[in-house]
Length: 148
Image (tube, one colour):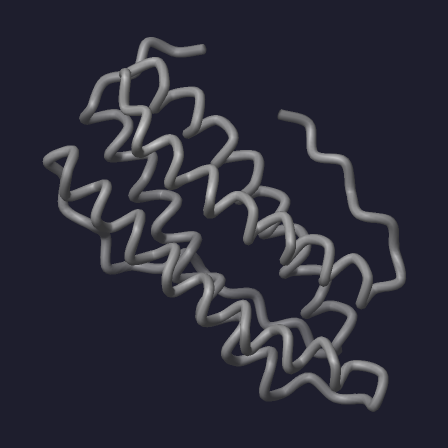
């Protein structure tokens, strides 16, 4: 693992924050435009996911501020697939990336001795893994194995 500094961790958390913003936007939009009777249950879950992602964004913003950084205001680009499966697939892939990154952040926080921060990120990971399960289930797939 790279030798991490507080400044580098703040920069990486800002990338994570941009991804949280992306997730909020995607979940809000997808939950409203997804079509098909088979997707009504997941549409409601996507609305719930949006609220959870907002909580994550607030936690990550606080950690960036704590590290002396300034939270970003720019989301990562949001894909707008034309069909329900494409939307769920985009969300699934984004959740997998988020989980991979947060696992790395936990290790980086601990390397810096920031154990409380690593615990907060671990709590976020629980939600993100639940989102991954919901999305895979809605797609009728096994939950993907995410290499750390």
